[in-house]
Image 1 (cartoon, protein in one colour):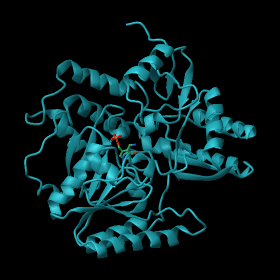
Image 2: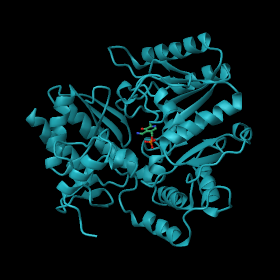
Image 3: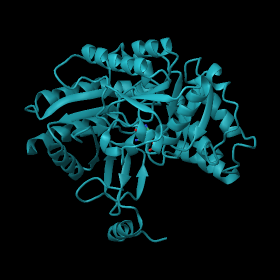
Image 4: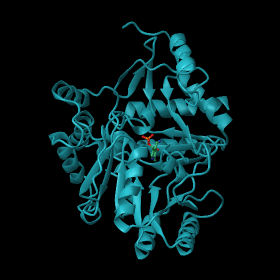
Length: 417
Ligand code: PMP
């Protein structure tokens, strides 16, 4: 099939796609193909992808290690539904448990992060037969009705009335001039107040690092204290690692940076390297209570499990965490220097490992910088309540040359402000 021109794509998009779908940049980029950390447009212009589909393409585009395994499965059989036995799904569950703490043993697979969080809540509610869900301000957990109800970035909520009982607590990241520790106390107090006023809370859900909210992370003790508080009240903690899982922070999962283990873990994005799949993993005790029949038609099908198995094998075989940690030794120092020389244009550098947020004064400044970087063939994203934080989530296979090029161009871009 011949390649559609960019104007044809734009015209079809306008005519046939529901207009809630926005594109980045004044002149959107038309992705035609990808090659590891690079993507190419219709003119074969090559871009360094520092966003990786919001962390989904964590092992890069068209990575032959992954695509070969997908093709191998594609030629055999793609789908059976979960009511027949197949090897890829049980291998994936085993593979996943091999990279998780020993208490997280049993998994269920669905298609997207939203569906994964829906399932996680279902597992929790089924376990303790309670109802309400606590979530944090500035969180994002999906775009179904229930996951919008637990999304604290207000502009994503579409409307504001939802059937599920959801309670918003103050988040852990200190915005004003208070310390991480003070903000931790404020957040924990607000969770406690919700629990005291509502006896029927089943679970709480949180990202370890709030991605869409602006790459916001907590005080090192936050999650240890939180899980204690929740368990004292028979409430389960669900951790949503949509953006942070599979080596992105230099640990296999971001919760390992905070020295606790969640009751239920939801992962997606990087798990499939772009192929739709999400996982919900929990303890034997919680899982073994979920015996009411439940199945997802395409969730955890053989094709997506083949991709996910290849992802986990690749991460183990090529020691991806080590690459992230090595790169970040230099990346973090360079970013700090750039911030310090930025005449205060860069307000803060946030995040852990290759999950980074670079905060600008406002969205206008950030948009200028992103447009400039695009002229230097670099793609990056934006996040934050004011959309003033540059989101850096490159494929985890980038090189030191890529990091240096990005830093050089970021430095140069500041001259236009
Ligand atoms: N949780 C988090 C933390 C996310 O960032 C997202 C999507 N950006 C989701 C859940 C929802 O995932 P999906 O779009 O696959 O439904």
